[in-house]
Amino acid sequence: MNLDVSKAFVRPMEDFPFEVEVCVEPQDINGDQVTFDPVHMNGVFSMIDDVVTLEGELHTVAYAPCALCMETASAPVDVEFRETFRKDADEEEDGCFRYDNKLLPLNHMTLTLLLLNMPMRFQCDHDCTGGAGLTAWDEEKTVWAEQENGEQQGTYRPFEGLADLLENNEENPQ
Ligand SMILES: [Zn+2]
Image (cartoon, rainbow, N blue to C red):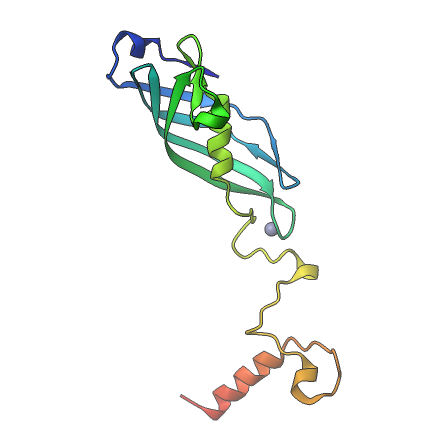
């Protein structure tokens, strides 16, 4: 996807609105396949001294396996950005993107913004526990039998906390 910014060369220092959609290839991030809805961007571009500035917002939805149950999870990605493009820039060294022939190649910039704004991890929903076999350990609610009385070593009694709770309620009626 190339954005034609030739208007800014005719009238420098003026803001021109733009609105584009960029398709991004699936990415392998830490071993997970991450896919993206078409990336919608809008904002303004302008040019001063051969430097083109692109400023606006980016919106898409990213999809990746849930960190707990591996079902597909989604996360919105919304980014405000302000990026500069120089003719013949060295993208690694100059910290800005390059343009050619009054066209801004947007794919590299889009991918860079997405990768910098990925969620730390994907989760299918707030209550996902990863299924019955992989319940998250919750120290508040669980008690190991051996810590209580030395009997039944290693036996996990999930309702012990609940029993304590009920007992307390009986001792302290409202
Ligand atoms: Zn899940």
